[in-house]
Length: 403
Image 1: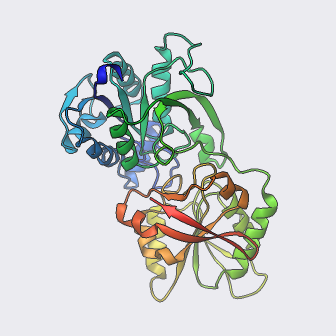
Image 2 (image 1 turned 45 degrees about the vertical axis):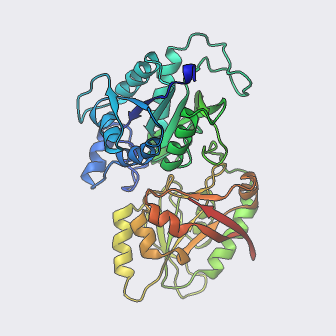
Image 3 (image 1 turned 90 degrees about the horizontal axis):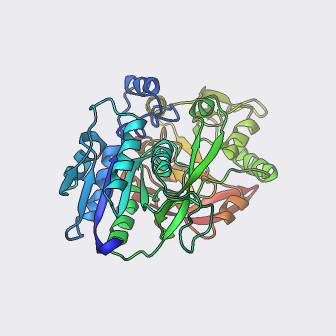
């Protein structure tokens, strides 16, 4: 960092994560935001940003530069930090253009690290803003691999969105703060070029996942604190079929099974005669008659749907959550399946969370633990420890789950 300065820029996307628990699979666009609020959704970005920023309090003399109000100032003050406010916004009406303008303002003011709270859309806005101001498209960060970026501004994402495929984000809000503190103190050397990914949200809501690589941003790197890029699952049909046969054979009549998004959970649904919503959360119940298709209790359920069903099931009933890790990242709860909220998880209990994964997906994690990031520290702690993962028919693997 030039001259040992300790200047952190801060941008908060105030609507990031708004559509997660209500099952809208994203928060982009004014109409989606309106629908999310009508369904009772609450933004998560402010709380996530505050959680990260509190880790900066121990750095003597740290200087935070933030956009006004809900776009950064409020979070910085809530974290107990002195803040220099720059730029202007119309409260309650911020958009992607504000994020892009803020990123360019932070870079122009020479911040040592630009922190931004949001999801893939926010990362894309920051990338496009910085890339448009890049001095030379042929420049490459010294000693780093990947594609040329033309960018030298260090950035780090605080995860707060519904979908977070991009590798520019820390593994959690707390880890974003830890890594930012280390970097600002000069205890993390060098930057890594990390992918900025985003998807077509409209296609996503129709059940089609179309992801695109937009470019790379330079991030401070420490293996346990920064997430990897999401890796799609392909060519594992036989393994998924074995997992599906095992889980289906052990399903108990009368129990509610909450199936998280994923191709592996889709295989389980098909095994019991249900066509699953690939990118949503579905609830099924098997019958007592062998060979009879399961009952689809709810398709593409949101948090409110799940809580209602669990309350109805409460009288002596049991519910189980079936989840599969995100390829290349290892998240089992808290990313892309926020409908299965901390309240839902508490209701079901850790003992009734079933993790399923193909062996190849576990192998690709290279020994890294499975991760949870629900936004509730107590629930994350409850889920941590060791878990038995179903990897095939009568096949199990023990894996660590970490917050």
